[in-house]
Image 1 (cartoon, chains in turn yellow, purple):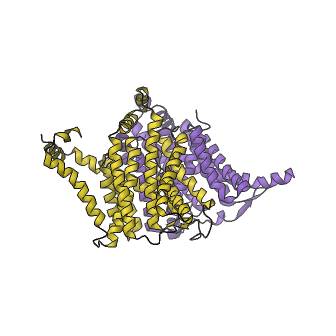
Image 2 (tube, one colour):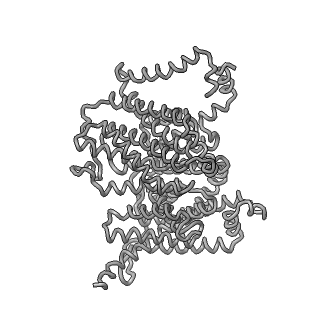
Image 3 (cartoon, helix red, strand yellow):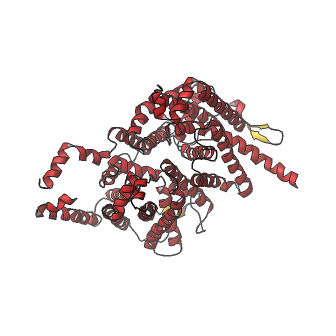
Length: 327
Length: 290
């Protein structure tokens, strides 16, 4: 973004103002009486966006094809259960969920980073499946179980309404966007890019491959976990079969790939499409998934760089970018 | 005392070996695709379940026996595999490393939701008169379906093994898996060979689906869990070896029934996944791999 520095002042100010105004408008949505359904879909948008952003950080920028986001989300959800059942406030559950997810990521990093490429992918696919059975067996807080399985209600969130859920989701969504911006422009981001292109070359030029991957993994796990906990505060109920479900991976994958993996804006565009499809086809659950599957295959075959990557390649975008840069 | 323990153990051991046969049957196609193209076909489990649904549809509409319906299922699945490889995967290989994986995920999503739309999310089962009830194996009685799947696995494994060793196409597949450029240099059309390999793998998935459906009830999402088991099987068995895959299946089957016997039925799947994860972490090339 070096070219931006040469930009004329008005455009520069506009660039700065636009996100601030956008966030402010989004934040007052619940107060000005936006329909509940809209808030609900925006809530889902921000939660999914956060997860997709973090998945993009791992799969797109760090070369870690991580197939187990469900493990982090499920663990954070159950941390939330434990926290709220011990009469602690829910926000501790969100932070705790993030911490537990991050700690778990650090724990599995040691064995999984030994696996390379496709083995890493499958190794991390096994993790949520195993965890699901752990939570079928282990009853973390005892007490009454819901729905015949091993499900729990989230306690102590009775006074919270969709407005609060929405603000939480908005906050984490914005945090995830800024986090991506900061990480990708930091030394960590550059090191990760080097590792993704060739880990051997990176290691031989002095990049500590394991440590950088670990940092990215732990950061992504924390944010994904926190977003998962926020989702379960809204859901109010958690069960192993849905918490450690491959659907979480599908959401991250769809949003990132449709929008454009390895682009910063990709997950935003992709998540809009994913949530829009949810909205449009809410009554036909299976059909919505079918369409998403078809889109995934078609996008991958025709424009593997995703919508954002594709738009960037077009001539119109390039000339616009050149115009904005004042050339 | 020891006699009693052994008598008690004989049932989980026999059941484990037979169950392992079914696991190996599911894993054979995955092993072939993984060995030849280095592709994790994450849609393998769903393709297998879809074959069970196909047999179910044939059974309920025309009353044709599930195993007999394979005369339609095998060519259909072979064609499906051939087409998937020729028109989707082969292009994806040229795009990036994760592209084939993502396309396989897309196919998996499509198949799951198709099965859900056509047959509803409720669980279904395949039935055949000869597969009902149990059969005595001297020490213990086992369900006939377990024995049937084990025999099917043994047959498919041996046929594949001999096919890869003796036929021209089989040798070409092995050559392409060992050294793609070398194979091309001696005049093997690797694109075609890959399509055949994928087709054959899908044909075994069709067989596995029918025997799976006879053994267990299935839902549109049953495939995911068995994909991971099948992957565990080939990781333990080592890459591309048909016999290794068979042994891997038995190891996992025994892990499941023995941990169920000693530690309770609830823990058995957990131990299967733990073993898979441990083998991946310690010896990703497989216990029998080089």
